[in-house]
Structures are given as structure tokens and as C-alpha cells.
Image (cartoon, rainbow, N blue to C red; front, side):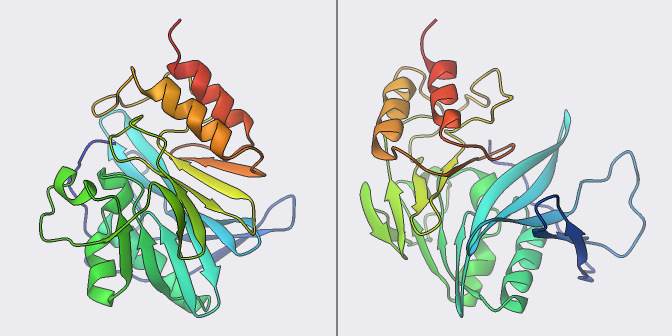
Length: 252
């Protein structure tokens, strides 16, 4: 998404509403304020949902002119050392996310940023304050207009923090990377992978539709059989999300 202003909440009272899904997995819903929300302007609460093994989906929301819009990231909840793949979309929700990870026994010690948009790094300052390791591509700080941020550099294709990172080329953004958690076979495609219900490539403000088709083909070739594929926005699916995205961005 385009760079958007961060929202802040002055009073944070965290409690957990435990939901049981049809598969008997548990999700956390984390309300962010202690006052009754306006039903017209309210943004849904941060949610943390199980995917596979120690991998959780974190979903946060931002109010766009068209209404509340969700954004996805991952929490890899390894005992004593959690890995965050992208922050929540706001500073307040990132604060809640970090608190919940610590409560679950996997305080976040590292962050991978998949590209420079605010829905990927709005909570970056909290990770820097905590001393967590941060990872991004070499051009991400400049694109994000954060010249003082000095992350560790992500490889084009390699392993960092126990996950596989791959840069297929310019697609949704010039610095977009995908992340595979190999032990769970969960691929996070970020915003260069589209939800099954999407009928367009989405936000094109920093996209390159000339190179995106080839980048999408490289992504399909690099990750041949992920069990779960998570888009930057919308619902997780399987490998069909990769081919669906390729169809959306290919010349008609």
C-alpha cells in the first residue's frame, strides 16, 4: 500500500477473546481501546490466527477512503525467539502484537520487512527500540524515506532467521520479497501475491506491470509446492494464489 500516516491510541487495555474455529484452532482477537467503538467508523481489532505449526497470521486494519482494509503478516512463534514478517499496519497494533507474542512465550527478536510500504513497516520504530534485528533489502530504507535505518541486508535468494527469502524482481514494489517458513510449508507472498477473490493486481502506485509477469513466474518456479500461501491482503490459500496472480498481471 502507499505510505499512510500512523494512528496512535493513548490507552491500551489488552484482553483476549478466544475463538474456536471449525478446525478447533484458536485465534486471538485483541481490542485496542477501552471505549465502545463507533459502528460506522470502527476499524476491526488486530487478530492473530493459526496457520500451521508455530506459524501464525497477524491481521490488522487501516481505514482507507473506501473503508477499513485488512493487511496480513506472519508471526513465527519459536520458543524464546519470535520472528515477525512485517509489522502490523499501525504503531498501536504492532505494540499489541509484540505484547501478545511475548505473552505466548516467543518475544519478537527479529523482523523481516517484505517491502517499503507502511502496511509492512508502520511499527518498525517499536522493533528498533526493542533491539530486535531488522532485515530488509538494501533499497528499502531509501524507498521508505528512512535514511537512518540500517537493517541487515536480505539476500536475493537465501536463508535468514531460519526462513527462506526470495526476491523475484520488481512486481508490486521494487523491493518486494517472498518468505517461506520451510518447516510449516507456509509461503508469505506479501502484496505481490493476490487473494483468490481479487480481480485486479491492486495498488499499482509503485508496481511495474512490465516486469511483474516474469517476477510472478520466477516465484512459481522457486516455490513449487507450498502448502499454504498467504497474500499481503485477503485470505490465505494454496499454490493456486500464485497462478491466479500470474493470470491477473499477464497481458490480456
